[in-house]
Length: 134
Image 1: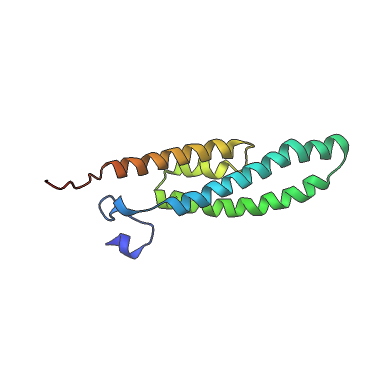
Image 2: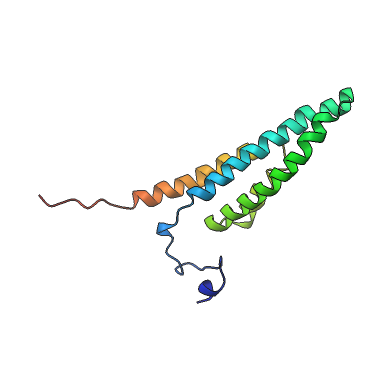
């Protein structure tokens, strides 16, 4: 009853999970993980050395705010996917934290995709095609 009143709250058996499709949310998350991962890697491995090594802060001044904007969009995509996939708090924290550590976004994205993809394949393997009795 409560799951009908409060969106996002569900107990086992309240909702039929066999038909839920995570593909759009997973695609949004994957795209944003790559965008944020590339932006953070550029910022940390190119922008910061240029700023402090050569005194050229231009790349850092451009890429920093762009990464910040895309990180907010990434957060929304990660929280949306975590809610839809019913991830644990630790899994969601790993997804959110991946935007802070260079190159970690790629690792976490791969793990999330593998975990959710395995669940999709397992659910589709449970469906047995009906054969005609000829």
